[in-house]
Length: 138
Image (cartoon, rainbow, N blue to C red):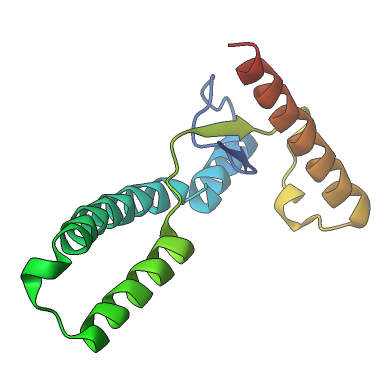
């Protein structure tokens, strides 16, 4: 399970009502999370890893028939283990968590003060923990 906290939400529940709201929404769109592309790529990688797993099992189960050179076989096994270890995890569930914006302001995306950053981290952790707890109950 992966929890992604969106600092700049992709979805909103009401349309902007004035020019500062429009600017705020435009900023959200410009800086919105690009993880959907990464998730799609992860699924492609997982598909190829599953395909490699099938081929590898065919090789392992038919070594005596394939007449492979011992060096070739070692190289195949080494590469398989390396790919499996480095890229073998599959993302099955992603939960998007949108941060609260009680008082959006014009310069909020330029506020990197320690207090603001700590508050954002705390809020993200709290919301992620709520998602985790809700999933444990299922």
